Amino acid sequence: MTSHPLTNLSALDGRYRSKLEAMAELTSELALMRYRVRVECAWFEHLAGCARIAELPALDAEAGAALQAIADDFGLTDGQRIKDFEATTNHDVKAVEYFVKERLSAIAGLAEHGEFVHFACTSEDINNLSYGLMIKDSRELILDLMDDVIGGIDQLADQSVNTPMLSRTHGQAASPTTLGKELRNFAARLQRQRDQLKQVTLLGKMNGAVGNFNAHTVAYPDVDWPEESAMFVASLGLTCNTMTTQIEPHDYMAEVFHALIRFNQVLLDFARDVWSYIAIDYFSQRKVEGETGSSTMPHKVNPIDFENSEGNLGIANALLEHMASKLQVSRWQRDLSDSTVLRNIGSALGHCALAYQAANRGMQRLEINDQVMARDLDQSWEVLAEAVQTVMRKHGMTEPYERLKAATRGRQLDAVLFSEILQELQLPDAAVTALQHLRPAEYTGLAALLAKSKP
Image (cartoon, rainbow, N blue to C red):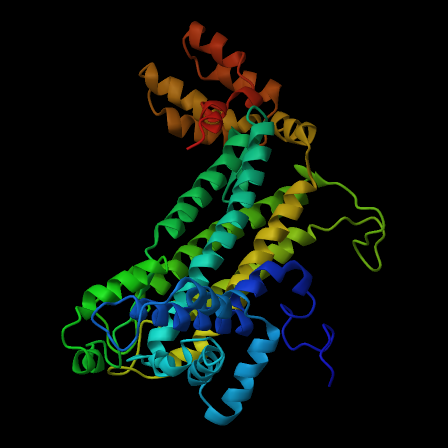
């Protein structure tokens, strides 16, 4: 069957591909090949710069540029050449090695040094660094998308800092807040998880078959291989993990994935809350010309972006949860069960990216219905019972909570009933006067102040 977006097995490469080009550039199989070629070329160059390896001379400017171009100019044709090699080797990293050797053979002065490609390496030396670079670059893209989400929530919060809103605890009317304060809560929570993702140290290793530099030290016993390894890994922008088996144990990947899971869970909480606020008309959605909300009910403007975000967050977290738990486990010094799992990094991050984009689209369509919020507050005077019983405590009155509970529990009060209850409680005159001037829309405590103080 001819490849076409309509025939792709994955929705990421089919329906949603246009939204994920930037992610595909970093996490596709072609991208993984490019990272592997980059690591192989960089290792060859590093070895050439090691004075104690006399058999491999330092690269002159021309040879260095030609070597660099193998990685920099890597494209689809090169990827297909690697697949051609893999058809014979049945080993994806060995195919990359043969590709680099083939390209190296055409560079003047380097052809005779081809066996220093992949020198003393196990495939995991190349793989772990390639995936490390993939995660490093993808994290920057994800962080930008996260910043867009947080920025969008902050913008809505700035618009509604002073907009009073009825809280709902257990789904019931509760002490009022402001819309801006509730939105800022989400922004602060998301920012914390975003920052933790940014702070995860990305690790890599280049230490041979079981992590002991066995082959290295036999060939060149005078080279300080741990130092060379650390220098090389650092040159790629990663941090050297000196204590490994054949594989870098992927613990840092679990940290990355868990940070993403936590961010996604907070965003899912936000998406569900906004969906619910839309349902009770606290938000309306701007109409898009030509868009259909329902195939049978013409009046509908559905909150599809928040639903799309929620769905993609769920898929992303299912993948991330499995990867985080699976990748930390490997039998003895190495098994290959991580290989197919690692190839799904792009899928997990792709669903994250879709979710973040959908949340942003949804927020851009929101309009705040402050009149609806004001109406709900004006029909919920019972929420002032908390204030009244607290003032009664201040004045030393007996059983204030119990008395207010008896007077208000399960009742919907209006201004008249609230005033009558105040008179029945026999509060001091000054307290009655102050409470009579209190309105649900004004009973928001320091919500507006808190909403203005961005963390």
